[in-house]
Length: 383
Image 1: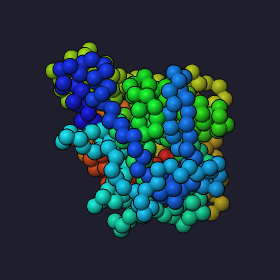
Image 2: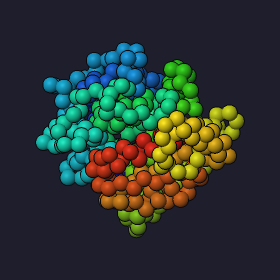
Image 3: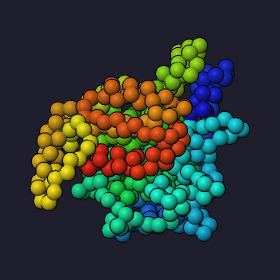
Image 4: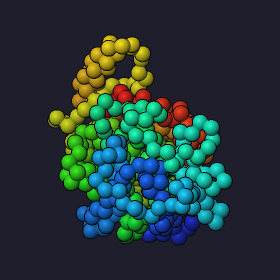
């Protein structure tokens, strides 16, 4: 989010077009694809309502269900290289939005977040029968993932690997101007891109809209929150997300008038209304509950207990909001954890806060299994 900071302190950046230029840092070259980590996938092109062509990847939980695996822009020797402008990358010494940094590197080689011994394992596939794969859901749900403000989807292979490990389908897009997507990014454009992604999954692919999980990281949290205000998801995860751009500007540079900040991403207001939007009533609501920790219950009794609890949570969810998980690092130097706390406090039940460690750009990586287990606990309860 240093790019956002630059937009806030540069006098001429008060013009909307220049704020956009200083906030979004896309790269066009794809440095890898899911085949690089042993996963089949489909390369998808969509057209938005305003006639912009955007690109994404669909990675099924069961790789054998992939319609076609595009060759994409492969990478040498099967090892993902970290050459793109990641969310935590720097340009001219200015740190960018560090929310994702999914292709964290050591000595230039991408490391899989799930590695225990520090060695690269990003070329090892984890299918649904793998010893290292523990499904988060009894039936397959689909994660619609929105990344941060820099790079492109090829910098998110580690995150794809995590979702696959958790037994979830994954669909992620590049916003307009990122990767193979056409156009130029702005706030309204990211919202239109998200809407196109949702319509593709539900209308074109025929995926049950009540099985969708919206997942936004940093800037992507604002995109996910917007989409949830229009289409109720099964659950939502916001990671390293700010309450709004003007709020963040006030924290970082209190002398800058809020009225001069043209970029909004009003996440706080949208989270407060979570589950009360156009699809907040009727038969679309699923799941519910208030915590995420799963208690031990041996043998067949555990399965019966889970089913009973899911039924109870289903009823609670109809009366309350969308299950929400806020993930934030106490060490986040760009978006203070106070933003995550405020989002959590504003949200209706059911909700949960997962506090991790590490900087804005590497919290999910630094936290390792704590991060993965936190996601698994949440998904097991609500999906």
